[in-house]
Structures are given as C-alpha cells and as structure tokens.
Length: 138
Image (cartoon, rainbow, N blue to C red):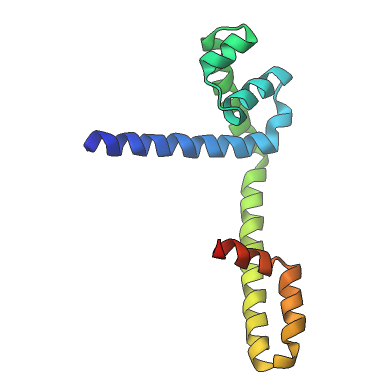
C-alpha cells in the first residue's frame, strides 16, 4: 500500500513536470533545433519512449535522453530570462477576475432591471458565458 502511494506521487510529479515542459515547448519551441523539436515532439506528443525514438532516428537511447534533458534545461532557461509563461498566467488570472466581476454585475442587473435580461444574456454569450455553462453541465 505504502509503495503504491509513493509510486502515485512520483507519477504525479512526472506528469506535472511534463505539463510544464509542454507549456514551455509551446512558448519557446522555436528556440530549439529542428532535431530537438522532432525528438521532443515524438516523446511528448506521440508518446514514444526514448528507445522507440532512438530506433526511429537511428541514434542511441542515451542520446535521446540527453537531448530531452538538454531541451528541458534550455526551455527553462528561456523562461527564466523572458518570463512569458509567468506573464500568461498573470494575464489569465486578471482576465478571470475581470470576467467574474462582469458576470456578477450582469446577474445583479438582471435582477434589478429585468428589461435588460435579453441584452445581458447576449453579452454573456459574446463573452463565453454560455459556453462555460455548457462545459460545466457536461
């Protein structure tokens, strides 16, 4: 039982690391060489193991592992210098807070001014309100 919990925690850490890498790859992948992009694409997007990539590319498994490690380090260094991922997180949070305030205001206005309900519903649809409600219901 103890081992299963530890294995699950390790798997979760690896998954979080991979998600972080993919986000950095989306932002800074253009900084990688064509070969590095191909190896990381095969590993993360096609879910191939380093051994499978090595066989397909005609290189050693160790060179694939080294490439993945080097790419991860290179992308993390780019983020440390440029902070695009951090800025996107901050912008996403600001937008979310803003939209929450807009939706609360719209709900208050619907109650206070029922004649505005149709226009406010149209506004919600334009700002993604209906789509978000549909996703929540699913």
